[in-house]
Image (cartoon, rainbow, N blue to C red; front, side):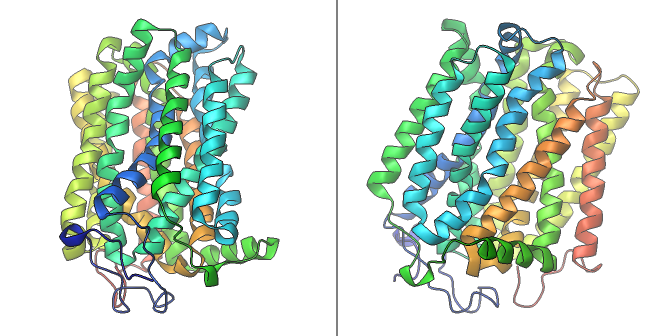
Amino acid sequence: MKQHVSGGAEEAPPVTSATASSQANTERPSDPGIGFREFVALMAALMATNALSIDAMLPVLGEIGRALHLGSENDRQWVVTAYLLGFGGAQLIYGPLADRFGRKSVLLVGLVIYVVFSAASAFASNLWVMILVRFLQGCGAAGTRVLSITIIRDCYSGRYMARVMSLTFIVFLAAPILAPSIGQAIALVAPWQWIFIALALFGVVVSVWTAMRLKETLHPDDQIPISPQGIGSALETVITNRMALGYTLAMALMLGALFSFINSAQQVFAEALRAPDLFAIIFALAAGGMAVASFVNSRIVEKIGTRRVSHFALLGFIAIAAIHGVVAWYGHENVWTFAALQAGLMFCFGLIGPNFNAMAMEPLGHIAGTGSAVVGFTTTVGGAIIGFLVGQQFDGTLVPLTAGFLGCGLAALVLVYVTEQGHMFKPRKGES
């Protein structure tokens, strides 16, 4: 086995016994058979299927709601939440399958499911059909989340894994920046159903790319038989490992804040800010904050460490959320204050997400597929539920949303403090 992803001088350093976790010192880092730049681009494209599936239809949620004859405006949030629940729940299936049958074949199955139900979403005639097909679309996309992180974990560990994930996020975050504009552009020339057709076509492109270029990264000796005991063992590992559990739950809270914004975004611009025409631009600015943060993280995380970067970013998130809440409470919110404060929140989130994920996965290298599934299931389903509950409180103002940001940030801080046993900001010996 080669010791790291091929690609010459642009490569991240290989995993070594000095940088891997104590449970992963004997691991054999895998070679996916493609250069580093293409590896990052493919992993980003896989992750982008999820971002596109959520964000592309946000500008037309009002049209979708009218087409489905929804009784309450808040009911349109089910178009997002149903997808997220399928996306989160199915991850528990993909993990064990990936550890038994390999990464590539299972990934391709997920992509096929995604393509089929992306197309089927275009033909939904009522809310219940839309909930079902969006749930199944999310089930297909779940494979891209589990397998992309698992494949990265097959090849990298520790701070190097965090760096690769940050580089992947830079490309991946072009999706939420562009997706609303793409959706809005499609809606100008075609019915909203064509947004789902476009998602299906994107899935076809990624499927062909994966089939033709990616090598299997699971070593035959590392295959794990499928069994309830295997899933139970992975769950037990996550639950009993303080670092894995703490950062998984903290990430669920941060995703809850993000999903609450996504759920409410169209209503925020149409009703609270009265600027629906600026939706795509302001949303892009906010998502751009995450993209900039991911680039910054990729440049500094190896030197500064995942803990120091993410812990300070969490404090920044809480501070900006508090300011945002005060501005909303006193009625001084306008589209430009919202844009600036939301971009700041997303910048902090961009420093938190890759590092929290990397630290949650670090102790799970020996069960990367199933471990990634358990972490993904917990963070996504937990975040979807939190985001839906916050989104359902929308009352035409930004107060419930900003209160949700602040509450999620403070709860995540408590979890991180307990996880680190009060020793925040400092790298631990042999850890990130």
